[in-house]
Structure formats: C-alpha cells, structure tokens
Image 1 (tube, one colour):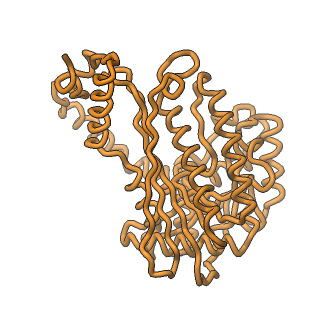
Image 2: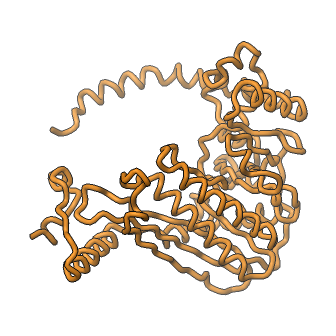
Image 3: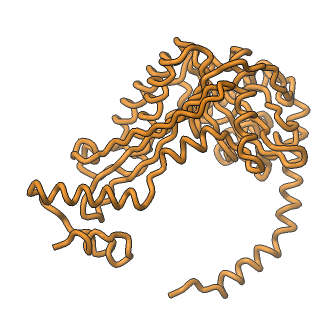
Length: 397
C-alpha cells in the first residue's frame, strides 16, 4: 500500500505545535553553552585535567575535545602565501557483497586527484578498481558475508595507501586530503576485530611514513555532527555524582559545535587547534595523535563550519597549519554558494560507482562464470520480488 499521508500529516501537525517550545529550548541551551565557552576560554589546564580524571576514573571511551595551546574562543585568519604546492585528494566507494544476488562479489574503487597549485596545469585524475570475489576477500572467518563496515574498512585502507604512494612522488610542500576523519573507523562486529587491527597497524605505519616525508595531512568533515567542544564543556560542569552516569549526562543537549563556531568565527577564520580524546587515543600516539580545528568556509551572515582533523605533526607546525588553512579556503570557494573543497568533490566523482557500471560488472562476471563452467546461482526470491535485481531475467536459465 502507498504511504498513509493522513497519518504523516497528523504527526507533522503535532511536530509543528511543538516547534516554538523546541526552539526556545535550543536557544536557552545555546546561551548556556556560549557562556560556558567564554567563561572558561583560558581555563585550559583545569579543563584538560578534568577530562583526564573522567577518562581515568569514569569513562575510558569518552569522546570530546581536549584544550590546546590557545584559548577556546580564539579565531585565526590564514597568514600563508602559496607560491607552489601539490594537493592530493583521495576518496573511495564500494559495492558490498549481497547474498541475495546471483553472483556475490564486492568492489572497492579509489579515485585520486592531483592538483599543482598556481601551475596552470589541469588536475591529474585516476582511479583504481579492486574486485573482491574469493571467499578470503568477501567472507569473514566464520563464513558470513562481509558487511558494509568490513568493506568500508578495506576501502579506507586502500585510500590511505594510495595517499602515501602518490605523496612520495612529489617535492614538498605536499598536502593530502580525505573526506571524513583522520581516524580509521572499524566495524564493531567481533567477526571483523582481527581484520580491523591488521588494517589499523598498516595505516599507522603509512601515517609514520607520511610524517617522515613532511606531508601535510588532513581529513575534512563537512557539516560535522560530533559536538566535541560542547561535550568538553559538559564534562567541565559535571559533578562527581553526574560522572557516575557520564554517558547519560548531557546538560547542553540542543547546543552544537557547528552553531557555536558559526557564531564565533568570521568568514575564512579557523578556531584554535584542539586535541581529540577518544577510545582510539591509545593507538594514535605522539606525532600521530589526532587533533582538529573548526573552519568557517562560509560568507558573512551565512557561516558554513567544517571540522578539519590533522595529526599532531601538522598541529604543531605553524607553516603547515597556515598552508592547509589557506588551501582549504581557496578550494572551497571554487564551488561557489555551496562551499566544499573542489578537489575532494572531484575525487568523490571519480570514485563513485554508478548503477550502470555495477550492472556491467554483473554481466561481465556472469559471462565469465558461464564460459568457464562455473556455477551460476539465482538471485533470491526476495530480491526479485522487490525488483532489486535484474540478473534472473538477463542471466538465468
């Protein structure tokens, strides 16, 4: 049956009746957060000590900002002048193995774009495609088909390896960008735990090599949802009794980092650099420790705040930090009213696998299996009934 719009309309009307109260609540929470930020802007050591106490005694997996060397409410303009630089962006996409299809396979596609700043040369664009077909490639050790998290882990690993390969070919300064956090995210599924550790160790090794050759590395998070500084302020005001249930303690719920730094930062300004307290802090040590800053790539009256993650070796190098700041502003302006780094957009478009391309891969695999006498399965009845697969009509007996 179609959607029951009458029921939905009734729900929307009830939401509408609550909007004003909700907005008043949000404004109150924002005011509380803003005042706490201003009052504690220079209270860096005590804020840091409070976080460490919470991590040590209440929640070792706490995720929040750690104060850096400058005030919480500082804003900075870029002071870098760029004569030349090589900018490299890598992004990936994937096809996740689907047990409902006639042929079960996966695909990781990594797109890379290289731009030489102020050279007048066109960007270099390339893609590498890896088909995953064997049991070792598409199944976990327990025999189950790998899920999206497991394939995404492979994709992220390939992205980082590609960054190192390309960055090693160019003289300094070299900047590398990926879409999303610097941290390598892994699936929580225990079946993938061993695989995650393998990819993590390889990634950490690649990071050390990128540091050794002096690369300015960053991860760009558009429209960030993690309220890391708000969480820091919540931890600051928490009593010992509150800390006993710290994961449920959110006195600033409704206030967001994106709003706060959209108000604090002028166009093209960045925030102070913060450290990142997270469960992965034990893995990313010393020069690899993850830091971040907020960057307003928007215009006057229309802030657009991104979170930019960087390793410690970039955070502690003013030249690299200013160069990154300037490059991101320049790149974001290229897309006009919807600011986002152009080179990341190009990398995403290069990596994206279209529906037609997926169908072409399906056909190529089916033809090869038939020619080699391989067994050709049928798509599941569920898949056919939902219209998710055309393989039965194209390749079925």
